[in-house]
Image (cartoon, rainbow, N blue to C red; front, top):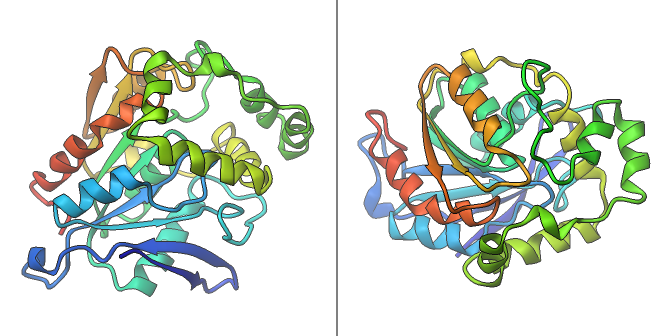
Length: 286
């Protein structure tokens, strides 16, 4: 049973959180259940997706997720950068009494997972990024291979420009491969439904995400001391494979799994294997 609740932060904001509780039979010597904090894509509500819950339950993992500011009932945080996620997750961890935990993010959640790994080194034991963006840079063509790059290009000019773009923005189905659509019709049907729900609530969360991605993140990749697993589909048309290569070169302890037949959504089929990777670390989830 997943417990949904609002966590009150010290600055007066609230974050909508979800906690699966995990399996008491997997408690470590410190009394904590192995815990994984999930960072959702853009846009989503933060509610846990069924394939993640099933994979976590099969491994006795406590799965915690939350809506970033302006998503899924969480309070806005005007001007937030990617690094701001670390303070929010620290607040959630304190409120829920979490011990050490790993982080996992997909697409827009990837940078936020890395922020936690960089800025909460005493808490985060490992990180996984599925199809995650690299920090904005001119050192490679950051936009090359993106079918829909207009939102991020507008975001680089600031929030007002991104708001104007949102007024006419529409999803281009060419962004997804046949494998992606098959995943959305099958195992990851809940992801598609949740993305629609998040979009219907308004564009503010996605706008703030894009501005955060296309401007300074607030931390350097070199600050991430924890082990990181990058999982990338070679056919991804939303976050091209060059981003994974850039992350691999910049992270001190990173490993890359390339999935040649996957796009942006179907790559998530590797989530169970990625959880196993986290469980096998020298300093595992708990």
